[in-house]
Length: 407
Image 1 (cartoon, rainbow, N blue to C red):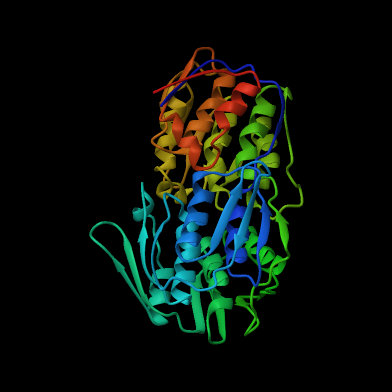
Image 2 (cartoon, rainbow, N blue to C red; image 1 turned 45 degrees about the vertical axis):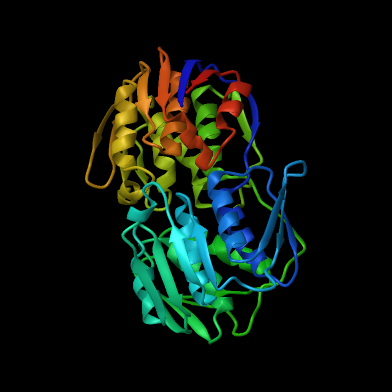
């Protein structure tokens, strides 16, 4: 699908969609609780649906009420000991649920799409195998699991992916033996680990973190609060916060909790820093923000440097290269570095044609860039937004943008 934007004079109020990060976590905790849970989640996406479908496949009941905008999650009476789970292109789904299916002793075939089979699973992979699980990469790019995860001391490097740590935390209440998780190195994306612990606490599991040691009280089980509400998503809200800055405040985004654990709430401060000129943005804890922040940087004074962004290379696309291609095709000045991007601000962008490379954040960033383009913007692969924000184009039009979608 191609999106052609002929006018991006956006104005009006938009409400942040439900947090994908929190929805994943609530669904998993609810799936293994003692009774059903209603999860208020006004918006869904391919990634959220991937987690829901995987949990269904292992025996949990999950139904979505379109009228109310909520999931009803019913824990499995009996776990399917042989299952096929399809993670789609969701890295969170895969990394959160791999330790869980191992803890449950499921002989599982895990299906992945897009670039997901290429995204790293080490050192989580080796640690699961060291504790009794059989794991195998298959020629058809699926993963097979066998055996049952045994407890004890798990050790993970903390500077690779917080999702590995969250996955182990989700699994620990399901392991039959006493367990603890030790972290080595400097912790990255700490807030996302804390989000996991908050979700567990909401469901009766009081995981704790002291220095390099994470523990879950032995013989603790998930227990439902009955109802839970998914908060607004800072990651996707960042597109509208950027639009607000580029329109001089004509766009407003509500429904974002400034006290949220979401690491991407840093967007608000970073946008201001960049717009003031000559900013250095450490992307270590906020890699998903780089594409849209680079758009703000493209029309901000001076030079903006994005550093410690290496993880962008293993996202839905190589986001360092695809972000640079997007910017250059729209008339920006930028260059690639070993660990990030340097963007030199110009007065306005020209417009042009962008290939999303099946990456939702590239597609949405190009749409926000249209605000400061003198010409039209064409985006190939516009359907990529379905991964995290299916109604993005509807909301863009609701704010006054003129968008034509063609197959």
